[in-house]
Length: 476
Image 1: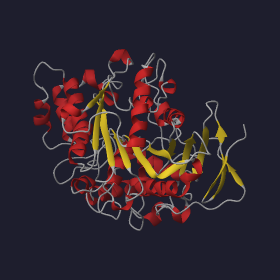
Image 2 (image 1 turned 30 degrees about the vertical axis):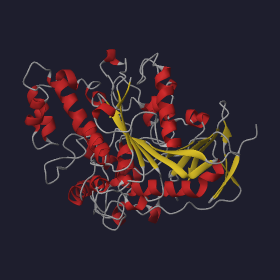
Image 3 (image 1 turned 180 degrees about the vertical axis):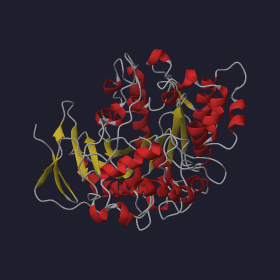
């Protein structure tokens, strides 16, 4: 079969027809390479090229360092690490029929704590969505210091600005891939879900997407300028530079990654608690979207409460045991004492002892189990519930409850586990070290992938609209 060629606003691209009969395009630039004067600057359209550009293999990824989890191969969800190259502001596209028109479009924002991840990770394969009759677009965006550290003289929230640029690219180009620019669903997981929730509350996203899916994220994971500037000062001190875009442009990517690793080490980050005593990243990442610019002129959660995104259908949910991914493989769950549990939460919460006592600390419950349950609520479930309750448009909610058999079943329904099911891409994440283990239920993957497709196509995943806990869809 002839390789498909599609015109875009920057030039023609040649994709590849997969063994499944799906047309796949990888590494299509939606913005210019963020290098030189464009580093720490707003994204601008990609430079035009002559002839036909081959897009038959994954392109570069945003600069990042791998941080492996003991006993688990997370690369199917996070990617294999940094693939260097300046031109990484790209999209991957899967489409069933180039001759088709009006297909629903899903645009995916990967997770990775705003520090890592890749659009091209194997578990993000868009084949199942395309086979079902949708166009799937997966987005690469700036991460870490490059994407989420505000610097004097530079643009803010660059990762979010990249995502907005990708959505504008979709509006201008997706018709050529068979998609309907008037039916775009933006979805993401973890930090990608935080991004979706932030854009739901951003005035700059109007008309760019029509439905939103938030998987294990919410709009409360943001910082104000005080914490952001504090973080910028610590990073700058590590680099022995001023916290300005001009100074940081003179620093190599490797040096920036070294400085980033330094603030990720225990004790390396500054106190990132806000005026109420909360670190909104709960220690998972110092880099978060920042409130107070044109992207997020007000807190996105407050904007949503006031009606932002009311015309956007919303599907939001989380996994029932999110924090097991962070506490089980490291051995913390079994080893942590009551006092250590309180101390670990104290760096992120103003009343750690009171919170943990409410979950049973000081009784016969193990401290690790208490910490998992409390943090799963604090970091994920509470924010998802709040988003669902205060979104003024049509809303649906789910909870993913199937537990991984990995590590003798102790991982449970942990963070990220739903992703291979949503994409119906279990094989990459299967095996003795794969997150879904062996013999994961194929039917559940088909059901979730079908529900996400139905939501994108019709605005309903196939269950009752959310009005309270009795209308949460339980996936297991």
